[in-house]
Amino acid sequence: MTKTTRSITTFLILTLVTFVMAGGASAEEKWQQLFNGKNLDGWTPKIRGYELGDNFGDTFRVEDGVMKVGYEAYDEYKERFGHIFYKTSYSHYRMRLEYRFIGDQSKGGPGWAYRNSGIMIHCQSPESMTKDQKFPVSIEVQLLGGNAEGDRTTSNLCTPGTNVVMKDALQLRHCISSSSATYRGDRWVTAEIEVRGGGVIKHILDGKVVLQYSKPQLDPRDADAKRIISARKTDSLILDGGYISLQSESHPIEFRKVEILILDK
Image 1 (cartoon, helix red, strand yellow):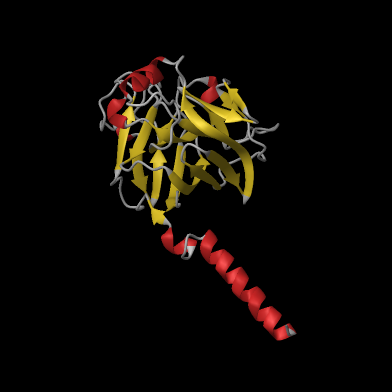
Image 2: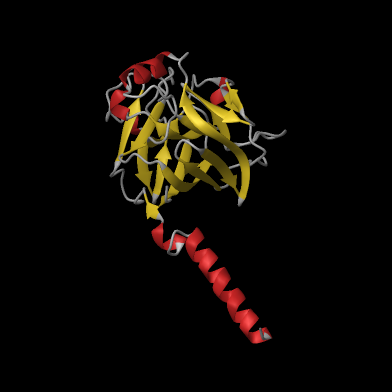
């Protein structure tokens, strides 16, 4: 084989590998925008203490192409945890968005919720939440802003009504820290998640996997999860899909460039 032939063969192999890894087409061409930058079309809020669709105090709003979460209408937070759900359920995908924390925490917000929000994946349907339910049963990609000093990781894991497997062991801890850097101030941060149904889930920042786990599943110890388990037509606790929601957890936050890439099963 001549040097020229080897070069051509190598080029063709690399091109084929890239094509296959992208699912047969350019990954950039297949990214879908979940947030149009103009309004909340496709999104439905569920705020604790209010009916589904009641966007109390204009908590979720769109300004200047950004989805904003604010609490100007709250005299006090009073544990009015909120989530805004996208209309479609997903299973195998990559998701990414940009977020940043701004301003001051709402009066009465829990201390742990300072510069704290989340991307909830594998969520129960918003219709199945009770009026006073704090959080949807889901897997939370926890978003944290750094304090003035000290380390504070982001893209952590929290598990409202769920458990996961890490290093071949079922994890019963509610929150597990990632290996991320600390992101301070009001800078925009790009969070990415790779979700493989009921298999592996990866949290990605700056192109690096900062947390990985598998077998997301319902927690039979949790009251909200018990309701879902009893309604399922399977004995398996594994969650292989669900809705996506973004949190309002008492600290103002902004989201933009919310997009998804569907992956082959």
